[in-house]
Length: 85
Image 1 (cartoon, helix red, strand yellow):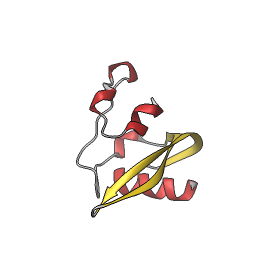
Image 2: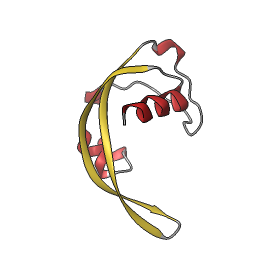
Image 3: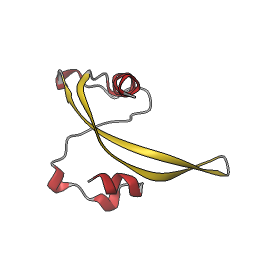
């Protein structure tokens, strides 16, 4: 799992991460092509080597850093993301 996470973060944000630790997981569903699939969403904590190189790539349209206390979880698309916070 760690290798997949490192690869995906690099692919999506051009960010090198390390010191990954599993944080939590939640059951979720993923509707695709008229079928609803049961999935498990997992959250990890990690460190980044250099935030100055962060670049939206692949499926990411943009990014921004928001202090945790300023997050509006009602804006999250999935219950599992709200549960992580």
